[in-house]
Image 1 (cartoon, one colour):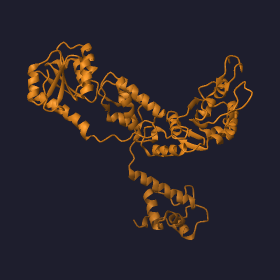
Image 2 (tube, helix red, strand yellow):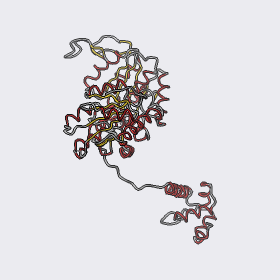
Image 3 (cartoon, one colour):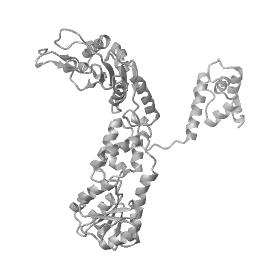
Length: 478
């Protein structure tokens, strides 16, 4: 069933077991170009080839789960809006109703040669036109292969650019899952060494007994099992960049050997008999508090100063505000094809739940959380329950007025304490008159002297008189 259209944009793909000429004539009279197919595979190819935005699918009376699964294969594309044709009472079938909810924009019930069908198709077409024409271009997700637009990430981008222009060692600090290796790769790609090797090694993932051989390599026969020469990671990164991840977990005995390499620019393979010059730019990272590790003697101070010439800090996800929603939508776009249903996005309660969660695993945890929700969701939108995040405590909301009042009270208390409850001096520090200080103290129910007695004898005469006449407080101007 096909005919020449007056408007190629108003095309509807009709999927049914047999063509319906009456329906074809009705759609033609209503200004639609209809294309019929029985095969879901053909339908999928036509959607991709001809960019069809509206589909009409007839569900037979004896519709089975296998039939619905076959239809779903070509209806998962979010850019095509589908309208289902069903028989009276068919929506009471649980399989059919779930299919309509998951994959269809709307449905019409027999008899369907009426204005209800025209309205449903027009509504579906209008929504697709709205997506195509009126949606503004999506802003950049970030820079340097990272997703993020908050101020902390913008500052990180600027510092990456600066670090890329120099050969100095860089240390990247940040919690687990914040993207430290992405930052290291971005620095490498913006340095003169781009195009050369970027070699990464996780110092915490290799047993201490093997780490030195992994870094520096070994000669044949250097130890039991060394059947042939092996080039180490440092030598493999010659003229490129070496990324030492989780440097804070490096065994103490390996730290001295690494320090010598950083100082002299040479290595010696295990079992070797001579130094080898290596030109390598070193970037290191760890989630460990390296300053504390130096204090505790777990990390050499001289190695720390060699590695931390330039220091970058990865912001934790909980401090990145709107980036949480940005990252969640990015993860959804990557993995939405993993789900059995056609997902349209994240519900508002899901966004709220993600914004209120602390994300101890940071970006890695968020991406895995969204990917899991894609698989486990049962509707067209990912909800808060699909995410499975722990419930946060609902603390009572604090108004701006309450915050200001507490800050004012704290400032007055601290000023009084600093000046030994000498009211004239406290008022001068706060930049207000004594009369205003009286009024504020009275409003906040603050005492004129610390609990347990009067202040020291160093009070000036005016303040001493004021303490002896507490009735003045009530007489202070409002």
